[in-house]
Amino acid sequence: MSEFFSVTLNKDVVLDDSVTNNFAGWTGQKILDEIIRHRVTRFESLDDVNAANKKDKQVVVYSDDMKKFTTIDVETIGDAAGLSLKQISKMGVVGSTSSPYVVDIPVNTLDFKVPRVNVLQFQQGDQNVIKTLNSFSNSDSGDFQVDDMIVFDDTTHLKTEYDYQMQYIGDIGTDNKEYGCEIDTNIFKSIEDIQENTDGVNEVIAIIAIPMDRLLIASGDKDLSYVQSIDYFKVTATGSNLKIVVSVDSGESWKTFNTDHWEDVNLTVEDVKARGISINTFNAINSTYWNLLNANKKIRFAYLLAMDSIDDVENIDDLELQYDGQGKWVQSKEDTYDVVYSSNTNLQVLLKFSGDVKINY
Image 1 (tube, rainbow, N blue to C red):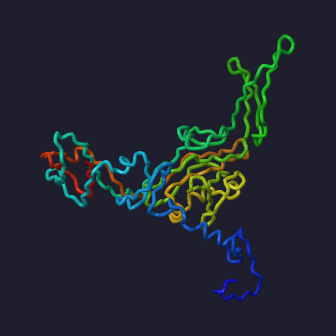
Image 2 (image 1 turned 30 degrees about the horizontal axis):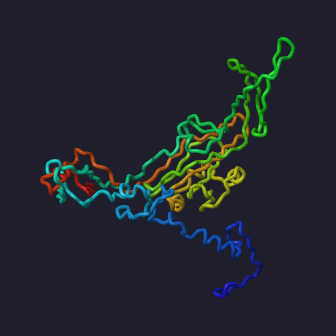
């Protein structure tokens, strides 16, 4: 017992590292593990860091405009960081088509062979934006790990129809031929029907079957660096067996939601089936819990697909995100400003709008 506490107990202390409640405590090792796990020790977990696109051979730089550290490629550090350009910023300019705001920029040029001028205008973040992250059509199949037992065709579901081409073995008598093929029945939960068909010159065995329960696992992260606040995620799906788990560290670990907190879960069919998030619970998780989870500004999902009967309809149709966006710098249209070189030493940019601007030249 700690020297800082004096505790009187009228019954034995129950230690159980597997639960969190008012009737049991944790061992010292479990407490230490939880403290370490919840500490913000990963650089990319800090609020002022955007490392969503990190990869090998990059450096970290600080953007004063976004008030965040970010990563850029070493070999393109000049262009990527804007170091090969000059920039001037103006806050709160007031301009119009009839009365442009004039920005004078000193330059030095002999023959007016000058770089293109680029004007950026700051826009406040959009509110309550709804974005489809996955529509689960065939074009979305590349967002997930390859699985031949899962079909993408406007919805995503388990494959139930299988064709096996048979090989010619030999003649039986004068009028019959023997064909055969090997079928691994262990990949199916149950086989509902087997038929022999002819496809052109090929003899085919057509099987209708229920495959074993499968995990549909995202192969990459969804970048959330543009999100100021998550309102909700919403999955549109049919069926009672679908379960969902979430990763915010590029698939290194996975989490499920339990009543009012996130818990670690193993990415196995058994664990996700037992502890994964149901459709109703997933769609009911409020913004507070999603934003607590969104420290790394990236997310990916995995889905359990399962059928108990061939007549079951179990599919995923859509995944949506509603969010409030961060402010952003948008390239101004060329008809909203004029560029004038009034002399060899003076560049004028005539702004026909109001707001905060950055001029690259």
